[in-house]
Length: 183
Image (cartoon, rainbow, N blue to C red; front, side, top):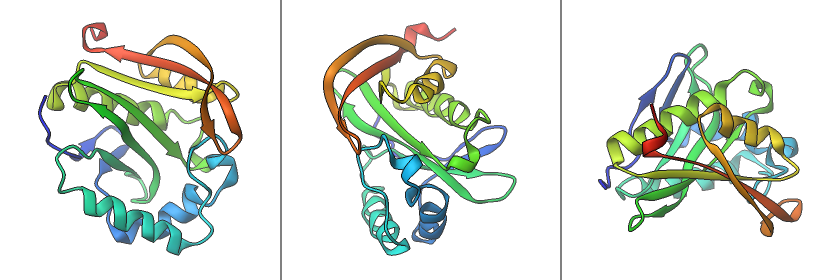
């Protein structure tokens, strides 16, 4: 496994890159301030652009650590930052990572998040050298599971009352892909 940190990735419609402090307004207005987007997430809805800026100050300071993987999802057509995808837990010994993501509601249903997730999975396998990438979602948020399925992940199981998010305690539905699953 190589600790190379957040590299820039490009897909047909997206650029995934490190955040800058200049992304605070896009972050706030495109997803972090929307209670529908943050409904099933583990962090609270941002109440002002200053909250988004403080989060970005923390994140940008961590980029010098080769084990920090956190991408701004940029729509090529507009240059706007429309979401986030990151490694939320890295297990170096198992060469495994858990990922999480959020996308502005205006961009839901367009295949954008599966496109971003596929690129991150490929990077984590091919560049970082991981063997497993997993993600979970609240059982009451099946759309997130469909993103995982479209990105090539397989359903593993449901852990009852194992998670906590902005809705309270929840069942976690887990999906994963291992390097040998890829064709």
